[in-house]
Structures are given as structure tokens and as C-alpha cells.
Length: 530
Image (cartoon, rainbow, N blue to C red; front, top):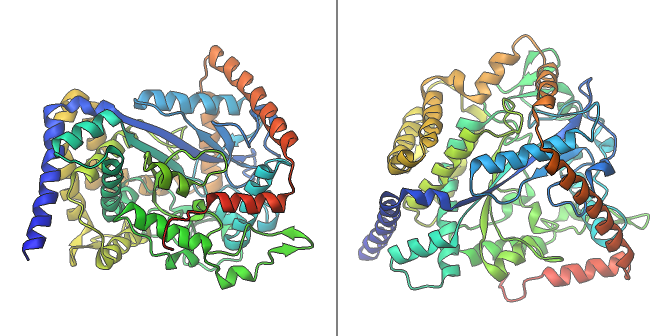
């Protein structure tokens, strides 16, 4: 009993020190560092997915740092640099959109997470990264994903939001808490503190920002589902907020057995490394080699650690031939990647400034709030709340769980938004746009029609999912702006990426099987018990 009291006192002191820090200096909000990765299918004017290969005029998919492909040739990924302001990160994202739009004449960026009209599953073209060994590895990994989950599922798009705080912030917080551990250990501990609370309250983001309640009927071909007819060619979830995060989206029965832990960094790394090394019988049935052609990287639960489908990840920038998991093992957590945001169809870039500003406050609140270790009961409750919000978030009088007891979603959310508002008090005086972002979320609590999921249903009524989003996507084409100077730099960099790919291909001097063995040897984390 005494030990539990001491633990509670420790968490309370941590919470108060964070609040005090922002009360004393609310300009610490400027210590946020952020980046965005937005995915989008290329679509034709008839609503079909483009089958044209990724244009070389956009550069090399293999080496371009800001414009590449995700799963398929057709699934673009726009990646920003790291920015300290929301204005600059959105300008960066817009200019990349503008550059790419100029290279795909007659095609648009699809404006929803759920896809436009796709070809049959086996005809969706997997991204081709060229003839180099590293390019073959990237393509083969995607081939394996297609065998495991289907290419159609891999064509669902999302927005990933990368968040970190400067070392200046961490030093100030470390001193405030009178912590004697190293800065790296302190940051690792605090980022995992944040991620535990993110898991507890991630349902909030799905309620406020879920924006994929509809899908074209072609997506469901050959799938069992419980969706209802909405309009021409369109099916929908009657009460849900996000098909992308539900059973039709990024889920995996194989990965359910991964006992991931967000309590300690070493526990997290060990669990993922174990999954990366452990074979999975159903995947063994996928021929590793068929007619001397590999079908996947391996038959393990996850081929590489990036295959783990989580709503948030700790990250560090990986070096060449280094896995994301080994990067955080070697150098600790550099930033976190929030992976559950749907593409916002009501904004040309898939994410708005108000959403980003609320993300700032939500993630800082997760960092400031008490965050005891997650036990099995906590995880079950967190998963229940998340799943209920995804599947039934718009249901009247929906009840979630809070510390084992039932509570109305509206009451729970009202309490959380009040806590975030209180935390943001001093910050809002420095930057009023945080007040605007919070007000927008409060309106969603009071008026369900303000929810993106409900707003989309209201606006698509009488139309089809495809026709409505075609109109949106077509309308966004002329909204993307790029300066002449930036366009020149993009074109120059595009040429450099193509030359870099040619250099990599020319310097390969070993066969692919040997390369693959060396790669897996190099990323193995040998000093862990797995």
C-alpha cells in the first residue's frame, strides 16, 4: 500500500512540474517540432484508380525524401521536412502537392482514406523501386504485404503526424523534475509516458477526426461485411466514424499475438524483435520461393518491424541498411509518429491547421497527465473504447469504459476537453489559434453534424462516394501553390534523385539472396532477450 502511495506521489509531481513549466513559460509551445506524411491515390476523371506508373518527372521513388510511393505505384506519399510552426509545415506540404500535380496531367489526388475504384486485387501494381538490391527489398516487402493482407487493403490512405519536442524543452523539464538520469533515458521514459496515455485516450481522436464512414462497393468485392447501402454504389457504417481503422482496414489477426508493451523502451523493442524473428504457420504456406521468385521477405509474424500496425510509434531516423527498431535501440526515441488520422476530405492537404493545433495540445496533455504503467486491464479497456468509437462512435448515448465503470462518451469527452482546455490556459494567451482549435472540437461535442464522419454522410446524401470525392479532388487541383524558386529547386532535386538511384544500382556487387542475408544480419539486435 505504501509503495502504491509513493508511485502516485511520483506521478502527481511529474504532472504538476509539466503544468508549472508551461504556466511559467507558455512560449515553450514553440519548442514543438513536427512533420507530416500524407498518402493519396492518383485517380482518373472517371473515378478509377490510375494504373500509370509513378512518373520519373516526380523523381526516384527510391531516393526522393519528400515525394515517393507507399504501397503501390499509384499510392503517392508526400513527406514534409521537420518544422517548428504549423504554417511552415503546411506550406511545405502544399508545395510538394503542387509540384506533383504539375507532373500528373489529367489525374487528381484522391480526397479520402477509403480508395477510389480499384482494379481487381491482383492487378493493383506494387511499387517498383528499381533493380538495386535495396530497391528489390522494398518491392518484395510490399509483395509480402499483398499476400498477407491483400493489395486492396494496402491501398487505404492515411495521414501520419510526426511530433517531438526540442532538447531545450527536455532539459528544462528534466531540471524541473530534478531528474538525475541521462537526457536520452529521460526522453525515452517521457515519450513512452506520452504513448501510454495516447493509447488510453486515442479514441478521442477517432471521434473528433474519423472521416471514412463511406466506401465504394467495389472495395467490398469478395469480402464479408456488415455495411449498409447508402446510395448509388456506396456502402456505409451506420454508426461508425472510420472504416479505415475498423475491420476492413489496417488490422491483422497475426499481430494480435504480439505482446507489445509501452511501459519501457526495452520491453517494446524486445516484443517487436521477437515478432520479427518468430515464424507464423499461415505465412509459411505462402511459398517463400515460387519458380525461383520470392513471395515475401520471410514467413515471420512481421517481415520487418515497419509491418507492425500500431496507432503510434516511437521513432528515430534510421541510417542506411538499419531498421527503424534498431535505430531507437541504438539512439533512443527522437520523435513519435501518430498513425491513426484519416485523410480529411474537407481540406486540400488532407489535414487542417486546426487539427494540427489540437494535436499539439492533446499530445502535450498526454505528456503532462499521470501515466501509470499499462496492465492487461488497462489495455483491454483502451482497446474497447477505441473499437467502440471506430464502430459506433456516432451512436446515441454510446457508453465507454473509465476505470472499469461505464460512462457516456459525451460525458467522458467533455471531461477530457475541459482538462485540455485548463492545461492550455497560458498557451492560448500566447497563441489564440489554440483557442480556435479547441472551440472547433467543443462544437463537435455539442453538434454531431460537425463531426467529419457525420458531415461527410450529410454531404454525400443523394450522391455516390465516388462522384462526391471526384468533385472534391478536381476542385483542389488549382488550390495547390508553389513559388517559382521552389519549383526550380524541386526540378533540380528530382534530377539528383534519379542520378542517385542509378549510382546505387551501378554499385551493387552481390546477388540479392546474399544481400538479404547480410541485411537481416545487420538489423538483428543481439543484446536483447527475445
